[in-house]
Image (cartoon, rainbow, N blue to C red; front, side):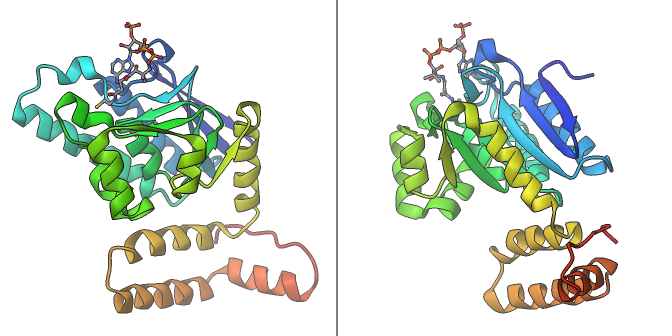
Amino acid sequence: MYSCITLAVSDRVATITVNRPEKLNALNAATIGELEMAIDECRTREDIGAVILTGAGKGFIAGADISELANQSPIDAKSRALRGQRVFAKFERSPKPVIAAVNGFALGGGCELAMSCHFRLASEFAKFGQPEVKLGICPGYGGTQRLPRLVGKGRALQLLLTGEMIDAQEAYRIGLVNKVYPAAELLPAADAMLRQILANGPLAIAMCIEAVQHGLDAQLDDALTLEANHFAILAGTADMREGTSAFLAKRPPAFTGR
Ligand code: COA
């Protein structure tokens, strides 16, 4: 079913692996299409509770496939950008947590897709950058917007304007990644973190993601109202009753997502 990616599920955690290692997993149109199918599949399958996104070989994703960009017209370029933005938004708005496990080069569209995930863990060999300006283009999959939101305007502009690559430690220092691991420990660490998340109430997880996602771009007053509404909705769930009564009974909760 998939030829540019793989999707493997192990005990509720799906791993989407971009699988074009000979091109450092560059995002051609077919790969973007499969990523959309994969994140849709993860959203709808009940046996999946969380997602890891990673890359095969020494790359995470080395950007958009430059061979497809070379002859694009302005109209092609706009629809390419909008399509990618739409697909990346599905990662960002997934009600199930999505972690980018950045194993290698995360450049251009690769850095942009990692930034569309809920948070990023990196291998010691990961490299990040928005090198589009070196090709005479600017980012088109959200890099000019998500990067300043994550690392601040000055640092984002430095990366966007120089096109420089930074290593995992620098990405950690500026807040682009949450933690750096020895390469062999990256996927087990992402899996362990998702299992910690999956032990919590799934509706509460989805509400946290939605509140952060929508709240960050709203006025504080509106965002706080959104939060209060989410808090109220959760008060009507079996999971809230289960979580609170389990605490009071000094037993672990058994959430059902209802
Ligand atoms: N699009 C298309 N092909 C790409 C690619 C991309 N974004 N990034 C790497 N590749 C291909 C290379 O052309 C090469 O293919 P080939 O073996 O058929 O020639 C293969 O992947 C391996 O890359 P190579 O450049 O040989 O590896 P390297 O280790 O010497 O360099 C990078 C790694 C990441 C520094 C270098 O590949 C690079 O700069 N890539 C482009 C990054 C970029 O500008 N991304 C933003 C695009 S908008």
